[in-house]
Image 1 (cartoon, rainbow, N blue to C red):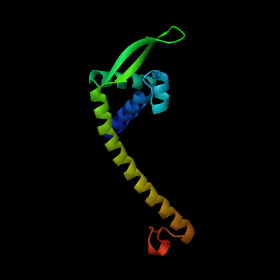
Image 2 (cartoon, rainbow, N blue to C red):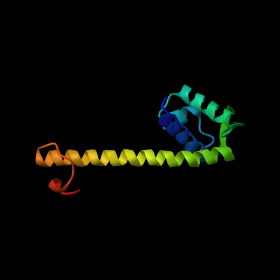
Image 3 (cartoon, helix red, strand yellow):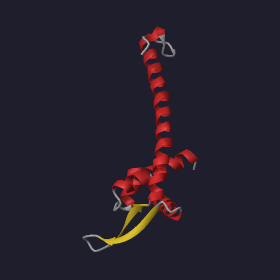
Length: 122
């Protein structure tokens, strides 16, 4: 797994846990878009790094469940990951925006051309 993808997954997991510490691993996997086994692996890694603490609690159906609590180090790491995530997403946005403008020019003028003065300077 590339470093950026790993950081994105860790960021998303930490972000969700910060707002919903009682979320199940299954629901977390669905929200992040990764396999359940991968969520378990990520949670164990975050716990080993001291970024997340797992606490047992019993829910209304009397089944054993966990709450995932971000530690102060986890909150600081999430803040750092937020910056990197935002930079990557802004770069993706700019690249996608350029591609869309190029396609609009192609559709409008019938030729493959970059956005610019000949294409309405969008």
